[in-house]
Length: 111
Length: 120
Length: 93
Image (tube, rainbow over all chains, first blue to last red):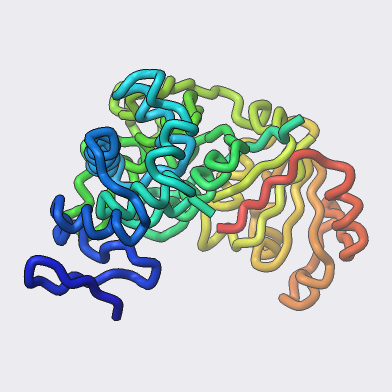
């Protein structure tokens, strides 16, 4: 099984690098997952990550691109609820990359 | 022009996997910009009942997933009126915030308005 | 006009009952696989408002007589029915 080492813990990952257990997530884990995706986290990233976690708590699923854009638009304003904005933060596939960093499962309906 | 697709949801939420599989098909189609309309009928209306707590049987909440439908562009949920009546359910007990619940009296006529019907 | 296809026995599944509940005036009903068991007992009398078809091979296989008011068809007939109707609703459970 794939794992990542951090803060003296060994955290299980699925074969695509998503956390197997959401409870293993911490900001430090996010930093490390982000670096494997080549993303350096800024406050703009964190607000989307927190929002994704809210989405997951509310709906118990990871959003595909379309609902992610809509949710971000509703919560953070129309200027951020655009695919191009999310694409710049989490290239090349914002729904997948941001879900991974947020510790969520891969969006099930994201092909 | 996009095809007019209807997903027919007629299974109760937790007794078998069909209700969940149906919803996953709907969400996948919606994510691909092929948003279907949904019609809940017969035991399918039980999927919409508020206050489901399936953690007690170690299942994920189908209702929570259904509540994501408006995020996926599904803004109207069609529900068979007589199926509700048969089961003693008031439309007020159905909880999908952000979506409009529309009661359908003549399901046969409603179904005939679609090109493709997926049945779950 | 909708073509309704039922593949489960009415004695073990709600498929036929659910289907009949949504039946429109010009709709057609096709019984296949275990849906054929609808031909047994008293059910054929009250089946549906429109034409009722059944897949002959499935009825033969199960040893069921096809009543006169039910139209027996083969696979080619099934294909024609599908071409003539829209939408098609499969009541498979």
